Length: 273
Length: 273
Image (tube, rainbow over the protein chains, first blue to last red):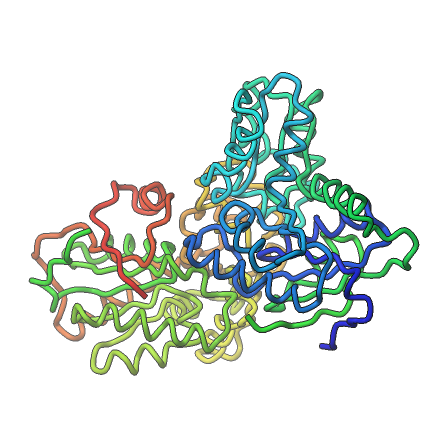
């Protein structure tokens, strides 16, 4: 455990999630904004947030924001769908002037831009789908859009077990997506940060001609726009590995980091929550 | 929500688990001891225990025991493998004269009795297998026994999603059990209370000639012995549905109860932890 280098704090992009799923956002940010430095907090001690009460989730959201605010980021990205749905106002309040981008709204916005037939599918965890938050966010932008949602609870454990190209995952995807396939959607939102790991199988199962909206990519695009608008985009700073903060270090963390990021685990800093 | 009927408290068998998995123990107790009344507490608000620290698990174990002790049970069964491994002493202390039976020790004892070639396989969650608790319990009884363990993290979500006879589950079982199948075990312990739900697929995959030890059944046998020895066995009292206490009522609870018990959900009592 070492201390996070604070030298270039002002230029950091802060990202937090309830666990490791938000690493897909880190990866998307690295791809879209290769010169930015990132600080990531994963609340691995208290994951998952989804099944917890709203009061608890709002408290956790405030904690997570406070942890990142210590590093004076220029933007905070909420990679957690649950916090995006239930506690974005708490994060915004705790951030003051620092802009906040939520993964849910970014995904919903991109889906609304992309759909041509106004029929959007959304897949996510039981908690996200049960909250109806994507449908609400999409219908706030365009009330004429029909949103068809489906919870896919096995996708997270399958992704975390590394069953990326396994026939079992293909069969599970066929089971979950059978109904949504008959709904004539033209756009499918991956409403869980784990799902990009299984994108290939999901894409092959949902069928051709359906545009996949990866919320992680959507949030990266939105962040790029925001930094361009505010003139805070780094164009030449040396890129580096993300600074990683976690509240617990699970046994499988190194394997999972490798799976999500495709690279070796850098130094990790343990934070008490 | 109603108040648990306390009339026949003295004859209650108390069972607790971190969540709903312990319902397989309830079912096994009902089969082995059809005239006993059961009170079950599932700590559904704080599940899972496995990934949490030992200090926290020991605190939760004390809480869970205290909740059941209010009903003056004649025996307390720890259906949670994590508590059985890390906090059985806490439960025993809190129970005073009331005997305590842990699912882990009961399963280990039965496996040791059954094995002929002294090669026992154990499957369980990452937390249970990582703790090495079954191997320790087995080797305390017989140090000559070779224990081969394998974590099967997808079995719990597959069981909870009702993928009981699904080809995806068969493929996952083949993946997990491939190695253990080459180890010439003659006994396989289902070291997780969820696994009896998938027993058929596990049994078919591990191959014939291997005796499956269902910890839930083992604990029921041990409870029967204990009640016979102490003269506390009910032989004619009218059987009834179990009294159910939970700390949270997840959306899927009714479906899961049906899946685990094969009957409709009776009244459930919400307890604060």
